[in-house]
Amino acid sequence: MVEISSTTLPEVKLITPRRFGDTRGWFSESWNKNTLSDAGLDLPEFVQDNHSMSAQMGTLRGLHFQSPPHAQGKLVRCARGALLDVAVDARRGSPRYGQWMAEELTEENGRQLWIPPGFLHGFVTLLPNTEINYKCTDHYAPECDGSVLWSSLGIEWGVNAPILSDKDAVATPFDVFETPFLYEG
Ligand SMILES: Cc1cn([C@H]2C[C@H](O)[C@@H](COP(=O)(O)OP(=O)(O)O[C@H]3O[C@@H](C)C(=O)[C@@H](O)[C@H]3O)O2)c(=O)[nH]c1=O
Image (tube, rainbow, N blue to C red; front, side, top):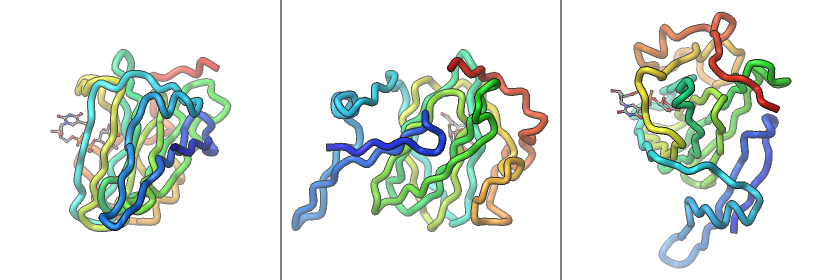
């Protein structure tokens, strides 16, 4: 029913739910706690669903996090268009601290990424009018909200001059970022 694989950051999981095609189109369970659990992936409880649309191709949102006690794990998918989704290990003491991974999530491939708390998250849109949906394990807490500069980690975004929010354009570079996350093994 669902395919789950590890990525180069082993805690970040690539999830591909099955699609049932017929003459009308297709059907897919985009989230099923029991199916994921049966496949070996027990995820924490989700308390908020987010949906955003980026009008222009080359729009980059990230790299975002919420500090404890409101750190968020996110289950991300692309509902329309296409995007390159990126996660960065930001847990102090992690053997992979500062390492990043990227995966194309598209309307067609239906892939999802599970990004646990302790990782930065961002994405760049590859098509106009791209929509992203993600489930979060904690509520939005603006006082805990933070951003790390997209260009400070050598990530291959595929764009040189992305469209950014004012906040993301002046975010903290990773080398001076004081991470609030700790690696717990
Ligand atoms: C994230 C968020 C924003 N907002 C509001 C605040 C603001 O007025 C408006 C836009 O917020 P932002 O500019 O932070 O939106 P955006 O740049 O899309 O932020 C998101 O980026 C991706 C990469 C993530 O991983 C998310 O967790 C979130 O940080 O929406 C909420 O009401 N609830 C929320 O959960």
